[in-house]
Image (tube, rainbow, N blue to C red; front, top):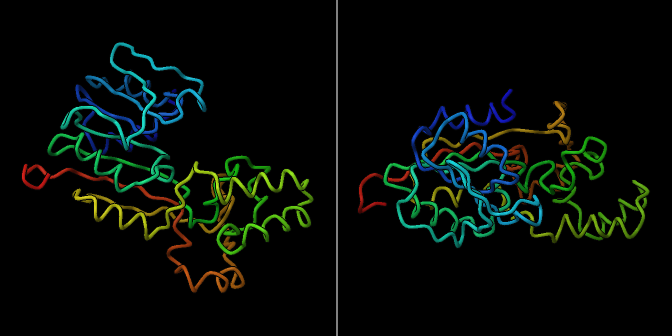
Length: 259
């Protein structure tokens, strides 16, 4: 059974993989990369990750038709027009200087080369803080959109007084939410501006919608109360707060003078 079958199907629906040179940005443990290498038979797929060793305990390695490297897309120094396609899953919300990253991806792609990126949750979403949102028991530790309408001090008090979190742990959580550089804290508007100004043809830009912290577990009821929206409506629209993530499909212009 393919663990990443649905993701790979999303990629295959948009770009050709067989006998192609593919780059995966943010390859993590390399599981999807290896699955693509085995099932789709690219000429080679190269995966890079900024935290390959520290987070994933994976060393640089090379196999028959895939390799994994510690690397930052903002400084990835492969030759111009080297890759036919770039895939990246759950990564765009982490990349610092996304404008620069897209510019380097464009440089790395051959004319007509494509990018498919599926990513969430973005900063302005209900769980955009990223704090352990994938753990069901901790998913509701922070209030809906709390990272947007609460100050760090307010969040700290809430965790200690309402959630009965030990003060030291509460401070640790607040630091991760408001200061940790694991996420780029780009808003929906920021992401659109980066995509539009990238110089790529935008073949697809599809928004993922969520109004509930339990979206990863199938919850669908609305948690955007009037009280929360009133706290945020001077800074964000309803659309900003509803968008959980994106599916983005980009293509590099084939005409040399526009590439």
